[in-house]
Image 1 (cartoon, rainbow, N blue to C red):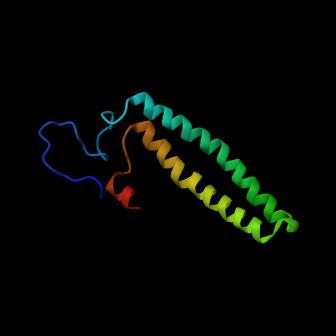
Image 2 (image 1 turned 90 degrees about the vertical axis):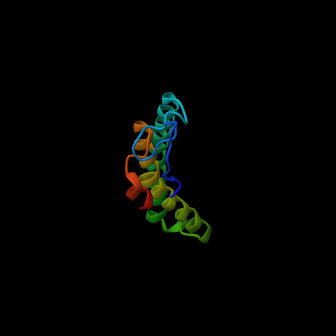
Image 3 (image 1 turned 135 degrees about the vertical axis):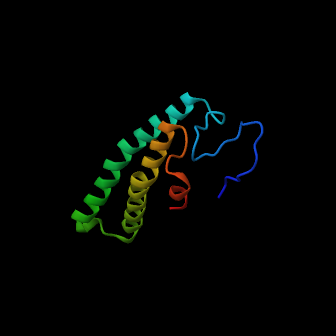
Length: 105
């Protein structure tokens, strides 16, 4: 757990699970990160899906090197679905909205 609960008399540092983190970056930077993640999701899903689909459909493409590329495409597809969407959602809110439980998962 990277957050250390302690007494904070200045009020500057707050829990990343309860408050917006605008003292770390400006709100427009969070919006820019959300837009970037949205672009990566829009580009990553179809490209990775097409890579998986074409390799599965055509037996000629089933070579050892293409299995490595297929593995990378599958891992990237999983990252787009599970990682980029979480980053997009939390960037839109300015803090990690899933709380400590979501952080442990």
